[in-house]
Image 1 (tube, rainbow over the protein chains, first blue to last red):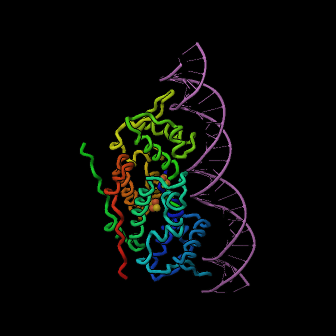
Image 2 (cartoon, chains in turn yellow, orange, blue, brown):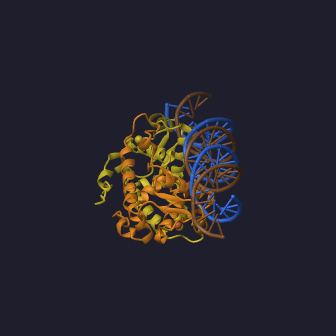
Image 3 (cartoon, chains in turn brown, red, green, cyan):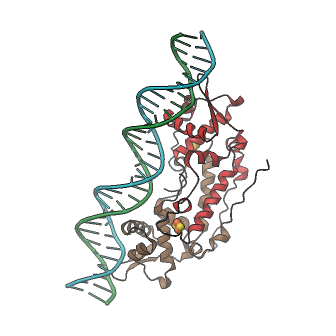
Length: 150
Length: 150
DNA sequence: ACTAAATCCGACTATTTTTGTCAAGTATAA
DNA sequence: TTATACTTGACAAAAATAGTCGGATTTAGT
Ligand code: FES
Ligand code: FES
């Protein structure tokens, strides 16, 4: 099944969401997130590491430590989180590496690019704040299904 | 990198496109497609097999044989081809299997569903005819990037 | 009837990506 | 000083993807 968001991406977004809802920017520990979100502790560890290295979260060591957001939730896009975890969005290898089994890009390439842009745009336009508050629904309109008048 | 279309999907769409552009619905052989599109012959074979079983193409055996479309190109959507090859589009396991490491679906589920619908809609609305003619560009508008007025 | 071109089909292997696991270390609050 | 919690790199298991193979069947052309 293609066009999937891996657990890495989902776990990561759930984790950041959990940190985001913590009031007073109290640090949230891996243990807490792991327990509440049912994410394997050591796997989660890797994900938060990436997010920290990308500057999305900061860590506080020692007892009462954990992770806090580096920016306000309304300044973090879903795209950033996903990109930190899984790399830049690229639906096909021909968009990123130019690999396509063909030497030069084929006629379909602009189609992949357009599709890619549209998804990227959706992810760019939704902030972490909107994601956890549910406000994303206003921005991300339901698709209009064009019925075939056959 | 997530949200990728596998080579299976791309190879398949390229193959069907190649069959679609053949005039007079002359059958196109695996050998021809493999050579022209640089797709491994025996891999391609598997893909066309799936497409045939899903009723998108028909095969003609024996010399001068090959594959032809079962329907006019303007009656086949990109979504159908992709679905025949890779199964129904489902961005996350929580949409299809309900798996999420959580017992019940979390607050993010409707977001995944909406995103999924929007992509599905794009793929549904483009026909094979539009794909090979380039007419898809009119339907699939470029994403409008909302700039942050910070 | 024979031959060569072509699909059919299942099983198998290889490669890559995803999804974890582990162990030894560092920092710090109480 | 101790227990809590992050840090880091290496490793391992599992799943998905990508590709291969061998033998069978069908059929146009001669
Ligand atoms: S499918 Fe990659 S450039 Fe055509
Ligand atoms: S991430 Fe799957 S339901 Fe929440």
